[in-house]
Structure formats: structure tokens, C-alpha cells
Image 1 (spheres, helix red, strand yellow):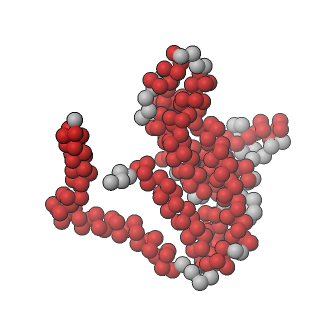
Image 2 (tube, helix red, strand yellow):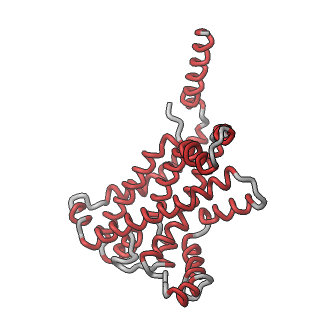
Image 3 (cartoon, helix red, strand yellow):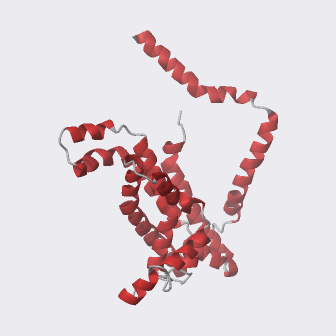
Length: 281
């Protein structure tokens, strides 16, 4: 038994080392374009870090308009993530656990915002929820509720573009778990709600956490759908990406300061999710 265990361990360790040991055999013709591609991705970030106003960074970030945009971004992205959790988790469970006619179509519709240009998404929201939209006209005439160019519109725009990240992540986590645990709980007499709450949710908790972080980061960086559906009103709908765009016209240093904050958030998100998509030796 010890020999078998040791053999499996050596085989596993050898498999982990194989990609590194074989790096010397990579053709030079592949290394050159790989290096160019890496430089292309790193160079803009290096330019931002090199030209950033480090000496006045704290003062720039403490400006009222910057703090206002930062506060609004944090509030709206968190609200959008909460809305995505309330609706996206059940949707992911439905796609992963329930076989129904048209499931592929539903899954395709859910992932459309991933490839849809954000500006088109904002226009679609405007045509659906605007004052003359499919639902917006009824909301305006019946409830007197006008969504466009409000803070609520920012939340809706961010949730629209960010929810697919949560649904895809949670559905993938559910499909990778063993459904027999849920079946065993049901056989033992647990209700469907009890099975979902006590068995399914713990199983897909890592997927929910990863999806929520991705969703929040995507909502924080949303620009196109927000500016189309909510506009760029300071203190009301002007989030950090919109503030960066506006600051480029009059105060490039403030734009770079805000960009550094967004870059820091992206790095933190990648650090949190590294174990989800990188095999760590």
C-alpha cells in the first residue's frame, strides 16, 4: 500500500513539474510572438504606473468629486451584485439542475450580455425601461416612475452586464458537484427547500463567492451601458469609469488617479480568484 501511495505521489509530482521541465524545448518561433503578446498587455499598465501622479495621488483621491464618484461606484456596484445574487443564483440552479425544453436557448440568452457591446446593452435598457419603452411607459404612466438618468438606472445597467458572470460561475460550480448528495437528502425526507438550503447552497458556495466577486468587479468597471442608460450626472450617475472619461478632458492627473484605483481593484480581484482558474503547484 505504501509503495502504491508513493508511486501515485511521484507520478502526480512529475505531472505537475512536466510543463516547467519541458519549457526548454519550446520552439523559438513560438517564444517571439508570445513575448510580443505579453509586452502588448503589460506595456499599457506600465505606462499608467510610470506616469501616475504618485506625489499628489492622495490629494487627488481626496478631492470631493473623486470621492463622490468613488462612493457612488461602490454603492451601485454592491447593490447590483446583491440584485444579481438574488436572481442569478436561482437562475443558475435552474439551468444546472432542471431539464426543461428550451434550456439551451435560455442559457444563450443569459450569456448574450457577455458578448453584447455595452453601449448596445444600454440602448436596449433605454428602449425597454425608458419612458417610452416596453415596460418603462407603463411604469411612468401607472407608478410615475422614471428610471433613466437616475442612480437606480446605474444599478440596473451594471446588473445587466455583470449578471452573466455570476450565473456562469455558479452553474459551473453546480455542474461540478455530485448531485447524489441532494438525492440522498431528498430520500431521507428533506423538503426541496431544505435540500437547497442545507445541501445545495453549501456545495455551490465557492462558485457563488467567485461569481459575486467577478460580478462586483465587472459592475464597478461598467461604462458603456451606464452612460447610455443613466448618463453622467455628477453625484447622481457619474461612476468612476465615467469620471475617468470626463477628467481626461480637463484634469488628466485626476483621471490617472482614478484609473489606479480601478487597477488596484482588478489586481485584488485576480488575487482572490487565482485559485479558481490557475493550478497552483
